[in-house]
Length: 306
Ligand SMILES: [Zn+2]
Image (tube, rainbow, N blue to C red):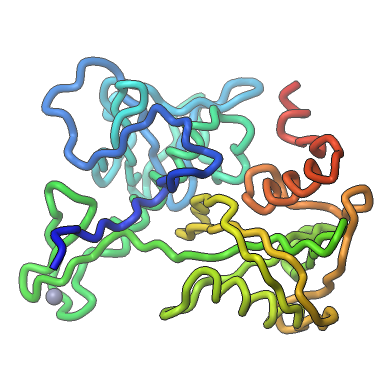
């Protein structure tokens, strides 16, 4: 028997070896006894983040105490330290008003307008707040749960069942065939936008099996050489996207019209509309384009800021 403990991945945590591991953020659950300076407060009403609105940007509240804002809330969850400054997720009460000079915004809208590290901390915070709201009672015996003090978990005082923040792993894969890549369009995408294929992992599957199954189910293509690319937390509402590349092995495209509207093979210089820079899908596509010897495609968010 080994003494190794299984540790759940925290929402918003970057797996080692991926493209976003340059954070100076240290995740923690137990808050410091005394806070020396201001802290970052990621406060949500539903899925909307409370921000200061400046003429052309948004700012996350950075205050000694959240109570300085005078906004009613249900409590705060300590997330850890960013450059030595404490970070908290705050659940605002339903009737919370918005103070003057502030606004409530969805995360997708503020991407590209907030510091990247603060954006991904907000993405972590919304998942912790959502878990707090939806895990009050034991799913087995219905009694109120108790917080575990040293880990992000709740325990049933009656049956001992542990409840961790919920994460749904999903795979996303870029399939190459020579100088072309496979892209598909789902009905709920914005007009003209295509992306690489993605889907949720089923119980009992390895990530690689999920990749193979999704590609077969959605377009009827066999693939080979499935390789890990990187991962990304996806807070809409609580997925962990695990990215892969693969090569075409056989078959012709048969679009599953339950899931997709269209699919096809595209070369780097004739790509359709693509998902935004926030997504790992776009990073996969950009990396394919770069490999074909072309400069990365322009980033709308950066263009706006420039
Ligand atoms: Zn129980």
